[in-house]
Length: 136
Image (cartoon, rainbow, N blue to C red; front, side, top):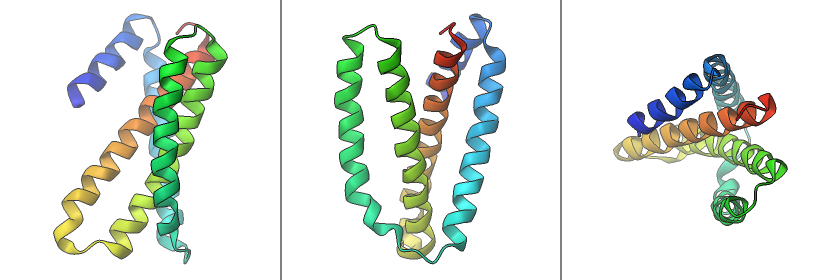
């Protein structure tokens, strides 16, 4: 996974969009820290998000397939924004599950889930910034 992210970042850098990668890292870190603090301080039970987020990921997969058949930049931007929202909510859900629901034996699963949420959020933010720059 790390190698493929490096390839994506190198492609942006080769197009002269290296600064966008740093911006995406900063935005991803800020969103992740903010959502983590919010989830840990909140008394809300976020376990209800699980089923809806699973359906949302399937909608993103289906929408991504449709978007790959079109050349509409608005569709690609909408998919990236939708992906960023879904994976932001997944961060809230997974932080809640790690902090309040998972047993110590399941922490590795929780850490991997959170890692994948952050990586997907980063990639979607990078896509949004790339689309907004007009040079993607």
